[in-house]
Length: 197
Image 1 (spheres, rainbow, N blue to C red):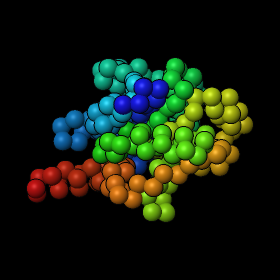
Image 2: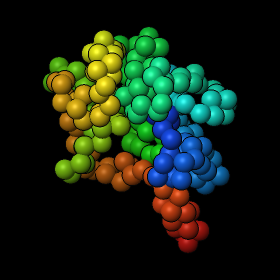
Image 3: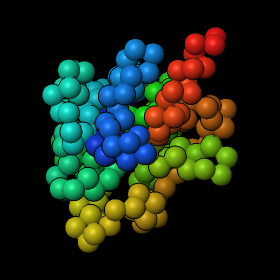
């Protein structure tokens, strides 16, 4: 565990690719996906926040503070990060999406090592050529910059990252850990695979 890091589970989307249902509450092997993420992330950080914009009471049952966006209209993961940066008391926050139940057990340690070594503002996971922007470690003092970006209408995570000093951390040895379940079909396929094993 890294004591000065707060974890943030990003569960504030509309779940459009899941048919408009709350992805984090869809069950995988009998438990909500966000709960899988919580159990993987919690041992790595001091505490965990959940960014959510619907079903707040259900998420609160997981035992973590639940933060709705401060911007209306499902403004995306940066709005969830903004709410968490405003709430957290640690100097660093790490984000993970609610639909990636098998995230690496050493995610925070490796992002933190790179952030420190590069004196970066943000560290993000990468596998192969793909940058996993929803898995990032960010300094809390970036909140004013994020506020300004969002106030100017910015919503794209990649554009905000491009304005910062970023350390990319290669996780090719754990590439499968970043798999996310975006659709009902993917969830059904995983459950069918479980039944075959």
